[in-house]
Amino acid sequence: FYPIWEQSYNGCRNDGMEPDYMAVNPTDWLSNSIKACCEKYFAGYMFEDCMGYYPPDHDDCNKALFYPDWSGSNKGCLGDGKEPYYMTANANFFLVDSLEKCCEKYYNWNYYECTGTRPVLTNGEYYPDWAGGSSSYCLNDDKMPDYMLNNQNWYLSTTLKKCCEKHFHYEMNECMGTTYAGTSEWYVVYEDKTCYQDCSGAAPCGGVVNSWVDLYKSKEKCCKGKLEWIPIRKCLID
Image 1 (cartoon, rainbow, N blue to C red):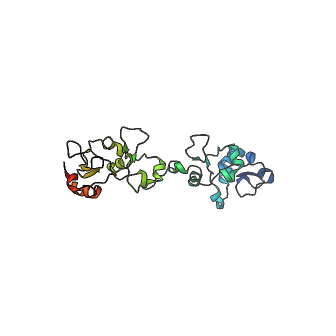
Image 2: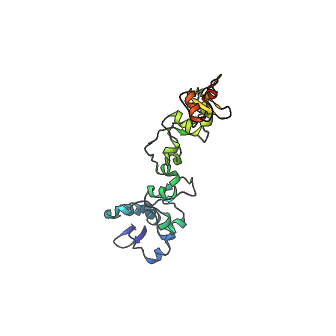
Image 3: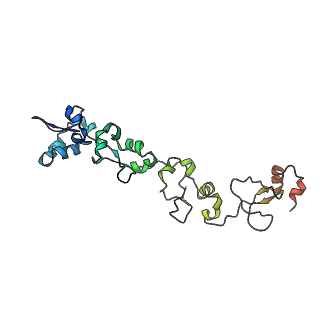
């Protein structure tokens, strides 16, 4: 926006027809919103006239331009007309005509916080609390960071158990907040040349295993599936 001082019109416009002396010195003459222009050049009793005189058929131009808040919180874009001069001087690069476009350009990693929006959760609400801000391992408080929202299939889960299995399988009991008893199915221990049950306690339990370990419904099936080169009777000996 640039100021116009004419007999028939005093105000600001954004039609690209500013005089050459303004175009070559945009830092001094151009503003990123009609409000900023009116405040700068038509303050006082002329301000309202400046704001109200703007041609109605140019309402699409009567919008603030947005810029990255690098000197502030650096988490989003602002449209307050207070961008640094170097941005005004290179407006085509730094200034954007919508909040969404500015956030996408400069804060894609923090897009939802920048725009103040949230996407639809398509893969559940549980997420890993790697920041350690609570006593829980997985949370469902709708406060997951944006980078998790950008990759929901990996970070989010539909249940606490699935979240714990995916992200904290090495501390399953602590993550679940319970003593996980296992599945009571069977898994191989190659060093012992036999199979044990997925549970805690005395034999045939061999301890609770991680979720990625192959399990079988019976010891016999485990022996045949994992220790086929060993006589079945030796594998089945308790």
